[in-house]
Image (tube, rainbow, N blue to C red; front, top):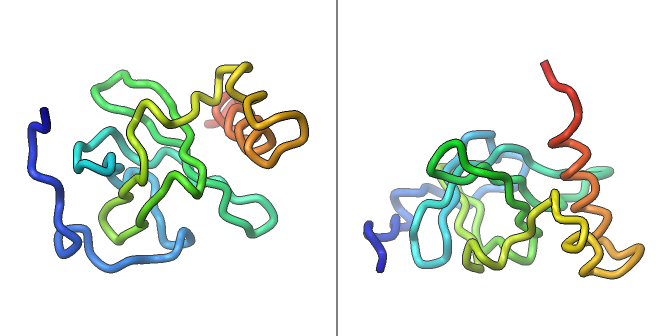
Length: 121
């Protein structure tokens, strides 16, 4: 059961390119439930590969949304085309293999995991 009404497009602002997406931007499931915030925008050689989401409630966990799992990127929110349960766990080695060896999904999940585990200041 949904606890909040989904945000309207007017509340989320205009659609924007991934380049305008900031860390901390709220992320919503397709039914409008807020599941977390953008932790990192994944880009390889100028191509959008998806987003790493830090889920709520805190401490949360990290999930990866591939571009085809994202319905809209707006000024004040990302709306997914899927439910939270459909997102990928970058730490799950089996999940990284589900796209098959050499797949773009496997490569993106590996980069997401590498980003999450690298030492950052």
